[in-house]
Length: 266
Image 1 (cartoon, rainbow, N blue to C red):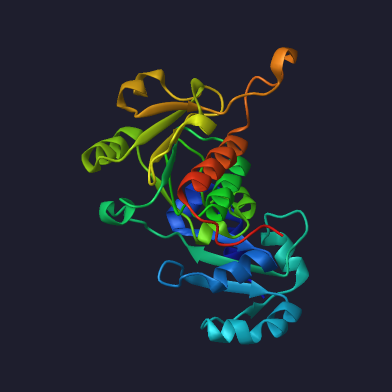
Image 2 (cartoon, rainbow, N blue to C red):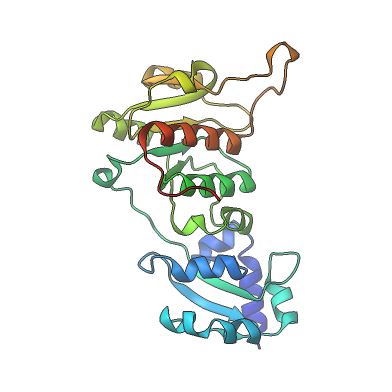
């Protein structure tokens, strides 16, 4: 049985203030916890694994192999601590990792950076999309939504355990890219057609906020301004794309130009 202080602590992790205070975030649901168990344990420390008796019995071998032991709790207790509408069969309390951006490692890898991304669902979807296209590093400005919120974690569908996310100002990452001679592209409504622009193999690609786009003042620090062309014609069409959709299209084109596919969607 969970103590009252334990319930209060776990429930508090739905707010950023307490996630930062305790250095913990929540991972809920069978798929997400299985992804966690398979993840690189050098980054992920599981502080508590709370589960139904049925889940614990069914997954005892996987837990044993990962050095984990599930604590059995009742459905009513799970309902009290879960951020989901329907209580899951399992919930883990996980330490928030501290990533250090290693310039040497990143030199040969694509990097996506975001200015003031505010919607948790969008950020989670972006992490999942980056994972699909083999992009392992994302940068968000400090004012962006917290990657460890329950909504971001759930929307990532486990990709958050494979994609590293750093919080820093764009100027900081731009200076590093300028030092390394890395190509930098900015995404704008007005720019060169993405599908007609040769992209270098491991660029930095900048995306603006959902509401204001990318700062025009950054133009003189870019190798190119790129845009996803609209095909709506004279009928007008939507004013812009959702940022998660834009990231998917840009990532797909970057992969098409610079990578060979490892697997096919079935």
